[in-house]
Length: 73
Image (tube, rainbow, N blue to C red; front, side, top):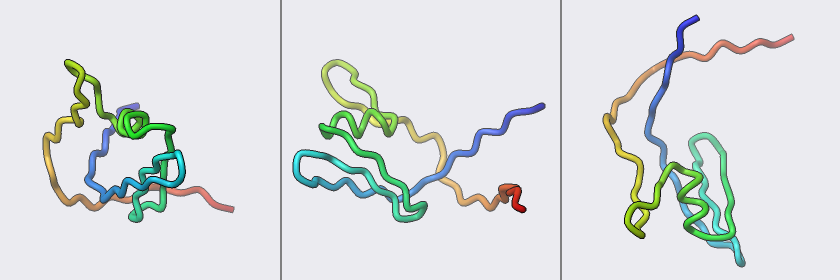
C-alpha cells in the first residue's frame, strides 16, 4: 500500500497560562502544552541548532482540497 504525506499551513497561537505554555490552532481545535516555550516549539517541529531554536523549513504553501474517509456506524 502506498503512503501519502499531507502538508498544510495552520494558524497557531502561543499562550502562557500560569507556568505553562500552550500552542493552539483554532482551525482544528487542537492544542499542545509544555513547561517551557522551548518544549512547545520542539513539539511543533523546531530544532536546536548552534544554541538557537530553528523553525521547520517550509517547502511549499498551497491550498489543497482533500477528503478523509471516515468509518461510522
